[in-house]
View (spheres, rainbow, N blue to C red):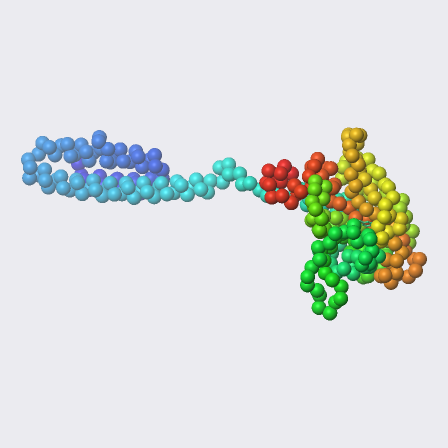
Length: 332
Ligand code: PHE
């Protein structure tokens, strides 16, 4: 047997090998116990010592070369195999846990979309307000007993050259004034956003919550328009599963004022829950923003978003919304 030919043949074959299985066959063929090389070693035993040494060392050298070729190839194929798996696009992926929107955001989006369908424009306003816009311009002067309705977080700093104190807005109503100062009717807007009140919390009150302010002004708007629009939106959000109740109330910036309660139809014995304050915009507000006298009429409302979410999802404690408990949030 020609050892050189054998070596060359083995080298050529291993060069073309692409899989670990073929490589194993190659190993058995060239280095295994029944390989030509092994048989050759066996045959050496019969030769005299001198010849045995000479031929043996040549064969040994070839065995070393082939073994190292084998090891190199094995390493290469193994690393290719892992890379191949890594890029296997047909392999089912590992499921990544995905985030999702907060229940308040979901409800907020749903309500604003519903108003948008009725032609309302969405406007945003500042969460830090001045005393003027939050109270005075809305006919709630200092010392007015109605200020007690809104326990307030006052801020220590002031805006330069401005007398009005700063606060965290207690409602979204200041945007009624801010918007009317810059726009002429007719218009219909909603203002979603965060509000803050310095009050003790319980299962229906939080010091931070969301409101959606609504304001629609034109030359012949009445409470009938208000009732129609609110009924449409609430029906849309609750898929017609709730009853509505309108009852008289008082807010300094509307006249007449009212409140709206809702109750689930499938719980006739359940409690009515107040979801918004509302009313016809007080004529003094039109005067404050310098609209001509007796020209415009409008309605305004402030809707509590958490209240709607609580009824919609059957949540009995408002404080859960701002609690970091993931077990609560993952249900939505
Ligand atoms: N801003 C009032 C509140 O937060 C609600 C309201 C808005 C009432 C608009 C009348 C008109 O209590």
